[in-house]
Length: 99
Image (cartoon, rainbow, N blue to C red; front, side, top):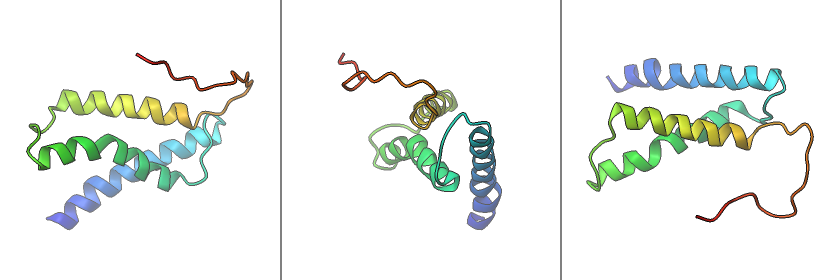
């Protein structure tokens, strides 16, 4: 059962994500050295913290809506981080705002 899940869910999803990242690279929208590694990083961003908290009993497993919202936020952060900058304008400092 574990092997079937890995093949039909994990690998299948990873391949689709990698294909999507390769298409974005080919269009010149993002720059990645290794799309396969990037997928692994993105999946970790999306999954690790909620999974860890649920496994340790610190919270209930996330709802499908929470999972979708987190995936969207992670994808936005990830894609912003590898976006190709066409007309850079240095700001001289970091761009993070303090709450």
